[in-house]
Structures are given as structure tokens and as C-alpha cells.
Image (cartoon, one colour):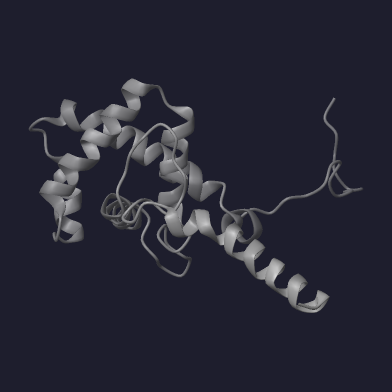
Length: 163
């Protein structure tokens, strides 16, 4: 065996070992690692549809295109109490059962309805708050929508000062 063959085989083995954890990951899980909550790929896809219904695509990209569902999942996993996480997961499961396959009008009427509004409130508050937070902090909004001027700003020599 010569040295080149041994080095080449060593790099192939090292590359295989580096890829092994991603191959052994549980199929049907979420696309990001979550530590405190358990969600399936179907839950993730449904949450992506929900955030897209909250912030749909118009002349600006929608929530699904900006991957805000991943932001919502990570924020719920990292920043909420176990009680809030449980309420979020229960609300997501309930919404998935009732809304699966319905149109945007069904989405609006589901959350606007007064029957069991107190049951839906914790999920909807977390979901809406984190979706809007993710959108306002997204790269698209920060680069294209907000105009930032460095401090101290422009010089306006004609500004009258009232004393």
C-alpha cells in the first residue's frame, strides 16, 4: 500500500464519519434541533402553513419564504416556560386537527370564533407574537424596509431651534 492511497482512504473514512450523525438522525423529525419540545415534520409543515397565512406573500416575501416557522419553533423551545411550551404544542395539535386542508377564511374564522377562545388564546398569542417578532427581525425587513442612519444623522443647517 502506498502513502497516497492510505491518505485518500483516511479522508474518505473521515468524511463518512462527519456525515454519519446526519444519516442516523430520526426520520420524520424537524429540520432543526429542538431540546425541550418534540415536534414532527408534519407539525413543522403545518406551522409553516400557519405562519404563511398570518403573513402571506405579496410584493414582499411571506413568512414561509423567510422560514419564520423555524424561528417560532426555536423561540418556543428556548425562551418559553414548560407550561407555555405545553400550551403551544396542544394548541398546535388542536389547530392542526381542525384546520388541516381549510382555506385562509377557515384560518381566520378559527381564531376569531368565540367558542373556546380562552383555550386557543395561549397558543395564538405565542404563535402571533413570535411570528411578528421574527418578521420584524428578518434580514429582508432589516435590509429593505428599515432606513437606518448612523448617529448623529444628517446635518441640517437651516433647522430653527426654539428656545
